[in-house]
Length: 220
Image 1: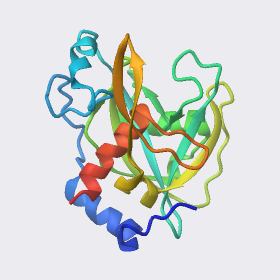
Image 2: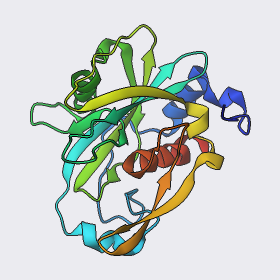
Image 3: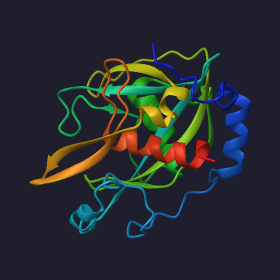
C-alpha cells in the first residue's frame, strides 16, 4: 500500500477538484507556442535537448485525463500493447491525433477514449485544459482534465490497449512519488519524470503531464 497521507484528504474530493479546476484551468484551447520557455515538454529536465526537437513540426493531439469519481478519486490509465510501432507497452492516457472532423481537442479526447477503451462520453464531464504539452515524437498534446462518474464499462481495442488500471489521484499528486530518472537518448543522457506505482512504470509524457497537473492544481 502507498501512503498518501502527506496531503490532506480534503484536497482530493470531487468538490475540491471542481473548485480548483474552475479557478485555474482554461476552458478554451490553450495557446500552444512550442518555443515558449515555459511550455511543458518531454525535455523539462533536459532543456539542452529542446533544439533537437524544435526543428520538427508538431502535430496536434489530445488526451483525456479521466479522474474517476469514487470514494477515493482515481486516474484511469491504459497500458499500450507491445505490438505498437510507437510507445509499445507504455502507460498512457486515452488519446491521439486530432482529426479534421474533431470540433476541438475535447472532441478528440472523448472520441479517442471511446475508440481505445470503450469509455462512453456520457459518463465524462470535461473540466478544462492543462497547458499544451510538447513531445519528443512530434506532437503538441492538449490534456483535458475530466471527471468520470461510476457505472461505466470498458471495451478495449486489443490492437492498441493491453490493459487499463486506476491509480489514486492522491498518489500521483504527491511530490514524494515524483522521481527524476535518466536514459540515453540520441547518445545523450535525457532526464525525465517517473511515478512508479506498484508494478506499473509511469514515465515520459504521461508523467510529465501529471507533473503539470500537480503544478496547476495542487502546488499552491
